[in-house]
Each structure stands twice: as C-alpha cells, then as structure tokens.
Amino acid sequence: MALLPLILVPLTVLPAVLYLCCGRRHTGSAAAVLQRREPGRPAARSPPRDTWAPRLGGFWLRLFSHAVNTAFGQFLLLPLLVRMHNLSLMRSLDICEDPTFIPEVAAEVTEDKSEAKSTLDIMKQLIDARPDSASTGFSFKGIKDYLDCYRSGKLTPSQVAKNIIATLEDCDKSTPPLRAIVQWDREQIMLMAEASTARYRNKCTLSHLDGIPVCVKEEFKVVPYHHRVGTVYLGTEPETEDATVAKKLREAGAIIIGVSNMHELGTGTTGCNPNRYHKIPRNPYKPNHFTGGSSSGSAAAVAAGLCPVGIGTDGGGSVRIPASFCGVVGLKGTFGRISCHGSYPLSYSTVSAGPICTSVADAAIVYSILAEPDPLYPYGLKQPKATLSDMCAPDLKGLKLGVDWMFFKACDAEVLTICEKAVEYLQSLGASVVEVSLPEMEEVKIAHVICILSEMRDMLQPDFNKHFQEMNLETRATLALASQFTALDYITANRQRTRSMRFLREIFTTVNCIVTPAVASTAPRIHESDLLTGSNDTSFIVQSMRFMQLANLTGIPGLVVPVGYSTAGLPISLQVMGKWWDEAVLLRIGLKLEQFRNQTKKPSIYYDILA
Image 1 (cartoon, rainbow, N blue to C red):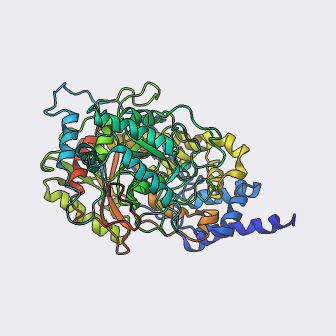
Image 2 (image 1 turned 120 degrees about the vertical axis):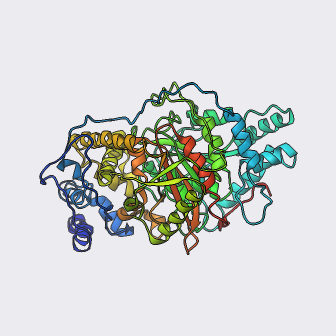
C-alpha cells in the first residue's frame, strides 16, 4: 500500500498531457524575450484566449489534489500547468509603471451642486414607480411588495418571519435540498421581526429596509452565527460582533434571516462546496445546475424567494456570476465603496461588497443605505457621497456606452445573440454606442489571477498548514497553484494594474460606461461526483471570470442585469461597468435595461413568502 501513491502520482500529468495534445498552445513564457510595456502604449490586441483543461471530479480530483501538494507537483506538474495556462506571462513583460497595490481612486472634485431630488426622494420614486405585483405573469417579490403589505396591514413583519421560518424548514427537506441559507435561528429572526412590527404599528420605521428579509454571505461576521467562510474548521464559536454591513442592516431595521452558503474560502466560481456544513446550493431555475459562486447562497436565496435582498462579496465576479446564473441583479460597488470590515480578509486588493436583489430599484435602495465611509475600514474613507442622481430619467439620452466588440463577442452564441439585442435596446432609448478598445485583456486576466491568489495564499498559509486535511480538494489544489507565484510576479501584476487603470481613465473621458455580457456561458450542470468530492474545471473558471476581472483588478463598479434565457431556460445577463464612484450611472442604465426582457420566467424552485 505504501507504494500506491508512487505508482499513481505520475498519472496526474494526464491533464497536462491532454492539454498539450488537444489544447491551445501557450504564447509566452519566462524564457521569452521581454516585451517592454511603455506608459500609455498598449500591446497589440488579440481575441481573448480560451483555456482548455479536463474537468476533474471524483477519483481524478482526489489524485490531482494530492499530487500538486507533493514535491513532484510543486517542482514539475504545477510549473508545467502555470506555463500551459499562460500564468507565467508577467515574467515576459518589462513594465515601466510603478505598481498599484490597492486600487483606491480619489474622488473627482466637482462643484457643489444641490441635486433636484434627494436620495430619499429618488428611493421613494423608485418604490412608487415599480409595477404592481398583481400584474399578469410572474414577477419576483421585491422590497415594494413587502412594504405594500406592511403599510396596508395585510401582513406584519412578524407574520412574514413565521412564513420564512416555515420555508427554511421546508426547503432543506426537499429533494434536492436548496442549501441557500446554511445557518439560521428562529429566535433571532422573530426578535428582529417583532421589533419591526412594533415600529410599523407606531409609524416610526427606520428606513425602506425596515422589515425586509435579508441574508448575508457567510464570509461576513453576523451575530450569533459561526463565521465559517464556507469551511468546516473556521468559526468554532458563535460570533459576538457584527461586520459593518450586518450592523448597518440592523440599524436600517432589516430582518437578517441567516447567513448564506458560499464556495469554500471564495476559491471558485461554481458554488460547489461538498463539505458537511454546506453542501451544494441549487440553482432555483435548474436545480441540477450550479448557482455560480462564490456568493452562491445569497443568489439562490433571492432567486428562490426566501428574501428579496442578499449581501455578497466580489473578488473575481463572486456577486455578479451567481446573480447572472440565478437570473437576478448583482452590484459590485467601487473598491472601498461598501465596507468589508468584519469579512474574512481573503484578498485585500480585489474584493468589493455588494447587494444581490430581485430588481435594479432594490439594488439601488440597498446600495444607498450601505455605501458610505467606515472608520473601521481603511479603504474608501475619502469616497464621494453615494447618490442616485438621474436614475429615474425618462430615457438614456446623452449617455455613451463603450463596447469593445472583439471582447464582447468572446462568449457562447446564445449569450451573444441576446446581449447584442439588449445593447440595441439601450440605443433605442437614446444611448449611443461608441466602439472602444480594451487593451491588454490577457495581461489583465493573468494579473488579476496572480493578485487574488497570492493574497489568498498569504492569508490562508496558516490554515493550509494546520487544516489541510479539512479543506475541500479544489481548495487544496487552488492554494497549491497559488504557491507558484513569486514576489516578482506579484509586483509585475500590480504594475499591470497601474497600466489598466490608466487606460480606463482615458476610456472614461469618452464614454460613460463599458458594456459586456455578464458571463460568457450559462450555469453548468452539477455532476453526481461533485456532491461528494467537488470539482475542478479550469476552463469554466476562466470563461466565467472573463468579463469580471477588469473591474476587480482596477476597482471600478459593475452591475449585472438579467436580459433573457437560453433555450434550456437558464438565465443570461448583461454587464455595465462605470468609472470609479459612478454607480449611479450603472443603476440608471440598469433600470432601463431590465425592461428589455419582456417576460420573467418563474424559477423551478420559488417560495412566495407573501402568499
């Protein structure tokens, strides 16, 4: 038996061999002649490169995860994979710019103009303008629907809380279990609901979120739940202090119904987390498909009707990918816009927090409540005041939408067809489409991977040494890969960040936003082996993050809005990205964009809490 690992370990080169036989050839390596990158002069453009690699699960994932954490894996297999996936690209570049380690951008100095309407007035207008829930066809129950019930006396927050508790008990007894909310407490839910009910009775509500059910990603500390971050070994004791976002939700009167599932330690984009505390959350539209990750449970809970608002974090699309796959709205704020104090600091330079909601109007309401400087969070302290200016404008006249068509078209045919039509719809509302060039997107991709994985490996090194056997197989493999990056790789990646931020500043002088598909494909199917061992699919990870990484590397905000469905009935979304601190223009465009989809399909799993 002792010889078995020695016999099996060489088999782990199979993925590499298959890649070399069937995949695309790598174009850069450490041995390549250094390509000098002068300030302001981007490299020649080429279409985004697809990465091919076999999908690993079951026995092969176990073997691969073991092999990459041996001397053989560290010195032979992983360096080979790094070269094949072009992850050594930074070693072939000589970039002149100084590195930018934190993508903080100073707010633009503008004249002090008093807005025609205050943010509170716009929020009221958004709620009043939303279509009535009794209209024909299916519509998600959003903040307006809850507020209408409370204000009319049809339901109280306490009655809603009882419905939610009954639903939470039911949804994880179903086949398959939803696994959206992984920790909840009946007493805590009822305490918040009863306090809200009293406020409605006394006509002294705290905000538009008073009595609104909300879930918070397990990456945040929420009293009295365990701060497990998707693992089985963290959060051994209940939390005694809230993260800032949880604290602000309580101050706004929201009912926190529990903490939501997530991909273990945020290390993947499927939401696949087979450990005993979490299991795999199901996509409400197709329960045999993934939700996307890593904010998987928040998106599933919102799409399944458990709550109209979920809070997530986004370091590589972790809000926007699951929102897109689950057919709901997801907003990644500007880096530092919403406090991440009290979240597990997995990657300090790429992660932003943001809401996942049933509508753009709801996302705007949550954003306006959460977005402000936090003395406990060092980033975003000098941010401008969050506004919703011009969000309710009757059209999009005067707005310029930047589209890099070469980049835009790097997606599945079904996704492309619907997203192109959505752009045409925005044009019909008065927006103009300006063709732009997004330079060095391959470099952006690699720089983002190096930054996020290096920072995660740094943060998780003690866990990796102490809790290796308790980690999921995919996490072990990902952190093993992260160990391949050097200090020079990291510094060069941050030099690339400086370049990319400069390019964006130039682009945003000519356009108001950049438009892309949200995700290049629809949600992938869950395989039977995933339920036990998880999975590792490099090709999917690369494809799912393609349109996400630019915003994470540079810190700009991004909004995804559902615009249609594939022939299989899986949601498809469009993404709008704006300049730093300009979430308002994204929300303005998003509000119009969600009108493009002429019909909302009801998810296969949906609980009407207000029924």
